[in-house]
Image (cartoon, rainbow, N blue to C red; front, top):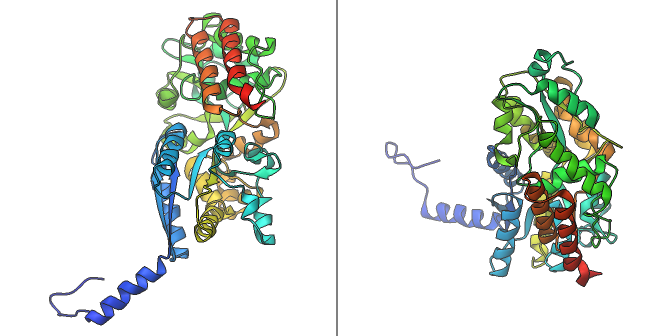
Length: 424
């Protein structure tokens, strides 16, 4: 509502002051939330929309939602803000950051702020596989929000052209190789698995499929030089060096989706968080499938959790909890899943009319959730960022031919042992 020059209708000074005071009184609590986007696209607009809906329902709470880049960028920016005294009450950060955030004593467990029966029911309402990274030593430190598993996207038109059944993606490594060879033609590769951005994540999927985890569940032990793990990296190498179904060197995480859409690869492994963007932009018939297995099927979970910062007043904690519960409610989780491709974080999300209708019309939206049956917690230890960097470097040095898989992983294991020794 504005002032009309033609009618001369104006609010009295007293009324204007009253409205101003009323508005000030309504916005009693202000929250700052940092959040990442790891798959590109216009997801900031989706988050802004959810926050706007929350503020309408909670006029006494103002939310500053700050997009902060990818997961690593967000962790750095949020912690820098805290260290410099800037107020921040909550953030969506890597689910695998929990050990480091606990070690730095900057987050609080949700068990300490969840008191009512309704709150406890909410806390127990998420998929257990998505809670695994956030539950440490009997307490819950992270709440699932933008969560994923790795899925296999494939071009059904290319399958048809190669004489393959477009409704049957590979379910084993051997099938992936044989189908990959049939699909590799001219400038098109059979498969691309990204090895920048989050190479450890893809490698963990391959290792699980080969029957070996990369870490113990205590945050203290890694198995990078285990023979099964070395064999896994050698298999990844062989997709390009022996079978010629994948490019040599590294495959870029950030541009892989576009490469798939442009027909440079018939299959790609990527986050389910890309699903809606692929659906909107693919000019061909495509499918989505669980990852193939060798000794077993498997994918790590992935994505971001909500964390609650310790240096927060009781009023701010209460407001932050309202926001987190709103953004993870079945209705909002369903809307987020439809808008992005990330999975609904609770069984209740899939019981909403919106998600039931969407998945009936578009069954690929169920693949990531169905794969939870075979999922494990994403790779996470104390000193996660540094341990992970060592593993990432090992993977890339092997894929580029700079080192053998054995040498690269032995070095990464030795580095991880040094980093984790202080926590033993």
